[in-house]
Image 1 (cartoon, rainbow over the protein chains, first blue to last red):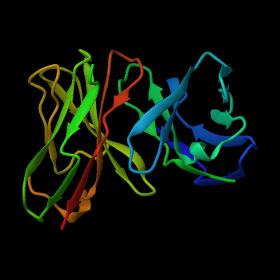
Image 2: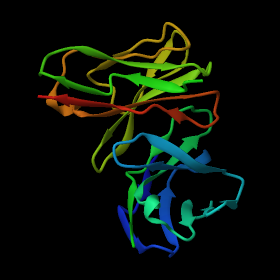
Image 3: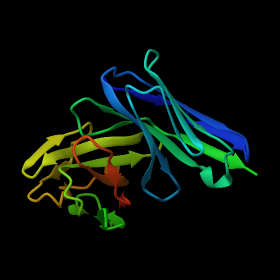
Length: 111
Length: 111
């Protein structure tokens, strides 16, 4: 079955890099996503990576995908207090329109 | 485009009451989904639809009904609300297997 696992909590200081990790079990995943959720708000798509890619960079965000280990990471460079939020990893499997989400990682950025 | 809209934003129900959570999108997306978000559980799929007239169950469908009479609308019905249905409900839509767009959510409390 499909399962997406994330660490639950990460605390960093402003200006440091943050790395949020995610593992998944479904080898037929086609797209892997990172969503951000601020308190009381909906989900905002941050970035995604197609399963045939190893890395994707978008400004301060770097996504690394290790298909062999089914491991996905999101690196946020120069983390700011405004980056404090819950970050969800999600996978889409081939032929399906729905997503399977991890439980979310709460990122706390202190000044 | 308004994107994905959900109404109401907040709702309090008594056990046994029924209600319909509304979801609409104006992007002509084929795929629409309903998720619920509970603390520490991430997002779990309730029901989804791959087009008008077609719906299917997700991971946690019990206690919920859906219908898709038009491309734009995908209402979620609670037939007899229970405290276990206290949650935040998100509707999402996508065009084919592209990225999903999420609505702002409906916070439901069942007493």
